[in-house]
Image (cartoon, rainbow, N blue to C red; front, side, top):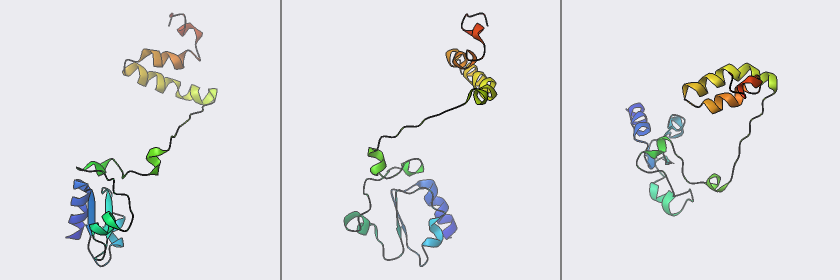
Length: 125
């Protein structure tokens, strides 16, 4: 069935996927893992490879499960930032410290705990 075909496509995560049905957009929102999707009976892969203009640097060997086609985003430097107020950090202190200690990263735990208990610096706690 077409439902099974979509499930299989998502499992295989093909580099190229042709959806050769009369109503291809009915299936598009269910396809999660494909490098490039060619929709409808009039859209062969070769059209995308040679003429239509989509990116041709695609994830291969099933890597479309966790990777995307090469895009301009791959050449843009991005950063992230985090900001907490002291009361917000205080609410998270126990959880963050506990996670760090469970991973054996005592320095990470101390970097949080020290902000609330100066004795942590002195090594007395």
